[in-house]
Length: 256
Image 1: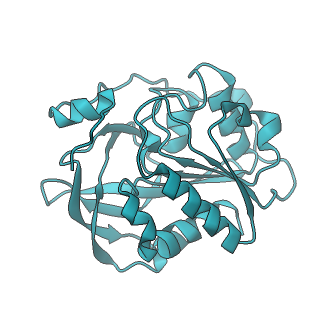
Image 2: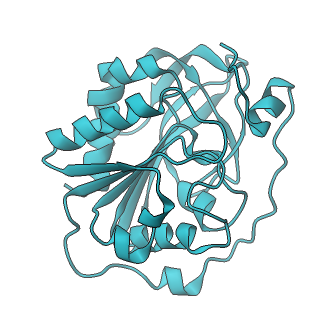
């Protein structure tokens, strides 16, 4: 399926090109790394954040509504927003987790601005972060892609069928079959963090290589879970995606 409107990165992928590899410094900000917890349980409240300055996915409204319904099932309240003013130290203090949905471009404001660092600080203090689909296609360096755990390179074949394989017994894959057929947009990454714990891989377009699709990581006192499944809208009516994958992932980042 070819998109009607393409961001620069997607257009490059369709042309068979790779997105230029950013040269990112390896050091982390000492002040952010010092945040290892604030000593209290996080609120059972979820911010579902959908802002993009690049390509906006048709599936985003459905994905947001789905996540909100899943939060309700966990006994949590939720707020859907695309306002970067919600990504500040003070505003994030009232949430237990942030869910990012296809936040392409510079969703938190300028890369050098306070938004990306506020989100990283939120997680390291004990907050949860759940990334869904194209959260890897944002910024080039700095705290945001480092927090996500990888940077979008391309998606050869666009939306296509593949075979996916679970790894380990993380709750977000424990109820999925060990292998299953899935149609989606499968991303390839660079700057992929070595400490990401991959729980789902799918076959690359060559039908041989298994590429990472979902992973998790402890980050300070908080938790990060990223799944790049979820490009087509219809994926959010599939209980493998909702009940077996997203629901336990959300529960896990909330530390419930």
